[in-house]
Image (cartoon, one colour):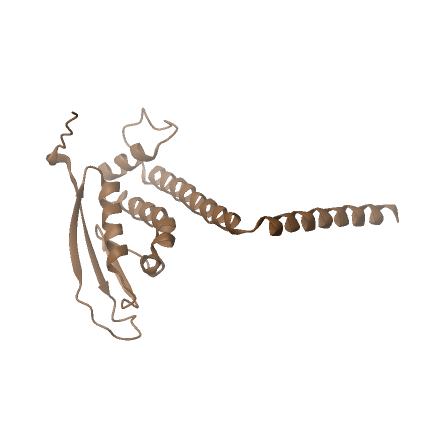
Length: 192
């Protein structure tokens, strides 16, 4: 039997506040703000748990949700993604979490160093002790780009998996015929 011991001294805590922003609400529906605190062994997991809670809490009654995770107020676009159905929210989950993690990296020097250490896949910064704000920003930009690319690929893969085989064959034939027409048009222009 394996025993897992968590050092509670190093547990990461993240608070979340979910409310309906009356200044942007069309229905002016007041919903009491909900505040929760989540703990996990890493900051990324704690933020993820808080986001999952928000995804389960925000209902269609929230016409202007305002979500604050670890003192980071999410943009309206990100907050409205919590209202999506679970599968669409799951696809957007990484984008939202990486945006929060990138903003948290600028809260202190230690947070910036930890963010670089967690996201440095190629070991570029393994021997460096301190990081400038420009380095943290560049790493955050790269991490967000990577996450957006992964999300885009998942969406494209989902579209491709839904297309019936006869439609995909027809699309391939149309693409081939269009390519042949372009080549024929180019050769006619140069011969004339």
